Image 1 (spheres, rainbow, N blue to C red):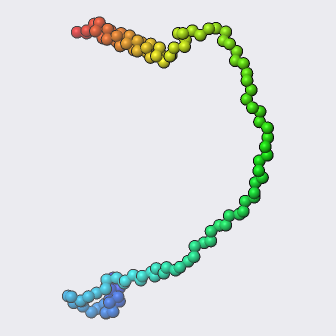
Image 2 (spheres, helix red, strand yellow):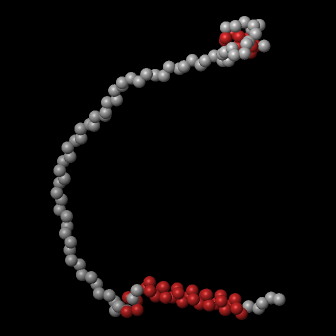
Length: 117
């Protein structure tokens, strides 16, 4: 019966008195509101002042050697026209031929194999 006694205490009535239809009862105590902090004007923190930098000395001029002419040695062998052609075209042609031969070998072996009964 502790709960009935609590309800009676909240509503200011005796625990042994009857409750009537339509009578308003407080079931639980209202929560106390926590006061929210009020906004205050606060100044932003001061910005950091940069320290002065030291003035750099101007660079000193130094002598830089200029370009010099050198003789290019002549090649020992003359240029060969087959070596000087585009190697990518030759590699591409060889790759296409090898792939074609591989495909032809697969197709021939597929059609020539014995069918199992």
